[in-house]
Image (tube, rainbow, N blue to C red; front, side):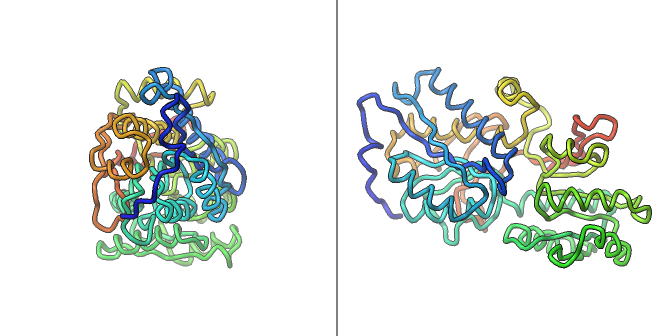
Length: 370
């Protein structure tokens, strides 16, 4: 692999901080609530690392940059953070943004531990510089497809917007369902108003509609239109990308927010560490933490372990992914090469299909696990 020299800032031994660059969406059109949860997890873990003595006596410092779901902005932030001498990069939620950041990090020789983005092809070519905690999209979405089949759904419509991420999701579903008797009809949301989606669902005799669209719009408007159409009283609405995970979804949709299954990356029961972190995150966020907050915490836990063991040298960090064995909030974290995945991958975090309980919209029901 390329081994660009680490800047002097990464090698200081004078008690100055060890810096980690954090990429998070904190303004629109980024998914702001996801960004806030991701940042809360990152910050909590940094505080705990420093309370425990830091990185061999040096404080750990988070240098945060808002990506606003903009790939170009993210790539520019990677350049800036590399120049500032960060030892590694962490974070990002949006897959298309994380892909731009990963490509730039690979070019610059800057280790990047991606927290939340799931797109399989995070980099075009295999790289030593990038590792990922979130499960690859192909893994999670196949589990979701299994759930659809087990629930009796074989005629599935997807309301899709143009995006590498949504196109990849539709392809994964189609390739998995077709040999098992399922069909996937794609509804192009560039051409359809939310109300017109209802006619398409009736015409295609779909029993399930999946939201492969942005949040809050047009996802919220589509849900409202379908829920109000008496012809579609029996149809299941699903959101594999996780739009219903956050409180804003319930706020915007009320009773319509429930019974919409989505993917969530949590175990059925949290470990003692996970339970302790959940309590601290709840206090920090003033609401129940999403799985994204746990992803943020685990990211720093891994990077802190690597930095303690191998120092803040970027090349040594990138060479150490194979030796990671860290107890995270959702299980033991180790990285390996996974077929079809170009980065070092934790295979796998726990995967659940859950929904909001109609009887209590603030409570989640586990429907399927993989």
